[in-house]
Image (cartoon, rainbow, N blue to C red; front, side):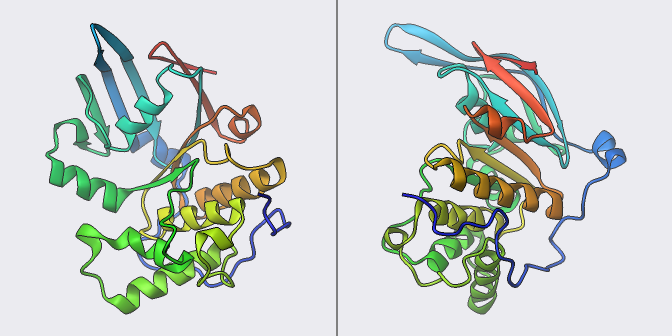
Length: 258
């Protein structure tokens, strides 16, 4: 399904202007403030009668505010690396520092808080709730530890986030009433409505046609620049990867610079 919106940049409506929004990151800040520091990160799984190595001693530093693309073959470790960065899984060995916290050593409740407060996720399959409107889907970002915010604040911020991605006129539409590109914009709005410091995207354009892919990437790039986000995109698309500041390849669980 193609996106009905044809402009290369989204229509800008009201913006989220809370004090939580990050200022653009300077090179000096990047050098002194790594967002991630991974040291000898290893991840193994048991698969029937053998051990599978997904990450084989990854050492990686990602400065705050950097836009990184990760490529590699299927089964090379891309998704596992993203799970480590997103505090969705723990390594078998090694440390994963997000700022000054080793997320690998945190308990389940603390990990949930890290994901809720610091990290926004965007997936290839959109992961929208089909029975909720676009506005209600964005509001789900405030579940759990963020649910104590005022209802009016949640509604205001969700509305503003959808306006930022050009969907101010689609607030009450269900996912089935939106094109693929519009659904991905709802997912981006949901990821960013909390004003996270990190955006992690797993094949965010994989289900989109070329024109819609360009539009979605323009939105991600604009949010990266305007908010000073740290962005990590896993992609098979070389065109998408070339838009990042830094490109990595992961194969057989090992990371190398491109």
